[in-house]
Length: 449
Image (cartoon, rainbow, N blue to C red; front, side, top):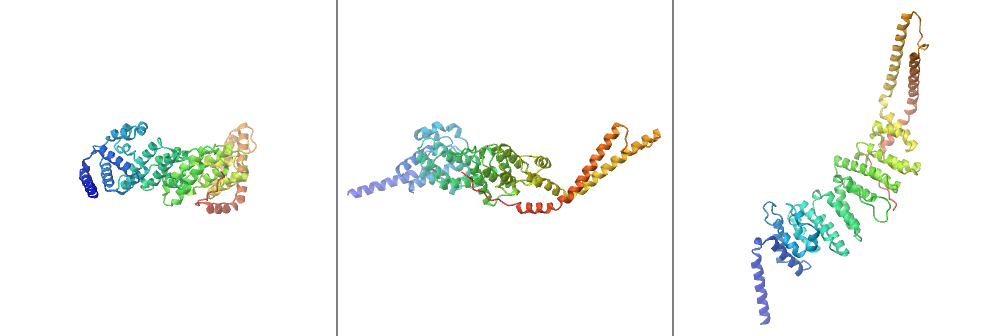
């Protein structure tokens, strides 16, 4: 009799629950949140149940409604005051009741188990992945303010795992770097989750800005910025292999700006800076002027480098992509190794080898024209005075200056003519060496800790 009574009572309860759930589509947003909170308290493990599934289906359906037609936009304010007053004090409801994020604060009570179930259902039902991403960042920042260290680690790892479910084109580079900074501030985060997060960030590297990359160095590291992180991001970006040339050039421009920013750091080791210089292929840069500026700045600050270390840094410079002004500056730059200046000069001549003879011929023609004009002028003067005047026997001061200038020009032409035969045998070797080095991605050296 007792069992029969219990069985009858259970059946009646199930019937009443099913009957109540038939009108779930007419529940308000706050009523849905209260019911979901009670389910979370009753079923800590969030096992699949008929009631929970019905609640989640209805809740996600409300979230997916067009925000213009949704009557539930800011109705989570009363609920958040009941269950998350501490969090609500740090996250203004007024600021977050925007058309795309009206539901964010209402779901802050979710534990990581129920959060996993909700996000997976949202992703499977084609809810806007950009909105899901923004919610996860909002959830992470809000929950970390009121939890212990162990729970912070669990929340962080769960959020990183859920980010991997989303379409990468919908991820925000700024949001990912925000997560990275939070990860850097926490201890005992599993290394595999850090690697997963860095891979996500590297896929968005062509959308990053210089401010994003300027992440402070880890504790107990004396240099200013985390250059090892940027090296890993660049390496992971190249391993993707599907970037377009324009995207690669964006990363090249970003890397050059980063190099200029970190070059004045006196504690930055040559091995780390050299790895930054050579991490990208030559095709990532249309011009090498910015890279030259970074190397020049580094050599100006790090005056104690030996010739070999300087040469390693200079190997990343492609002289063919330097402007004429930069090449002229480099040829006269005493901070660079002398062999580099020699190679630059040879490179300049090989770059313009087809016009060397024309240039020499033009110099000769200019001198001949000047000589003839000055001679004709003197001859006309001689006709007036009836005195013969020789070209190199001037009596006036202006004529002497003209003769001296002519002699200097003739000596310069002779020097250039002598230099051509000396340079010609070296040009094929320089060209061959450049062809072997261009277009290859250099392997990253292992940085000293």
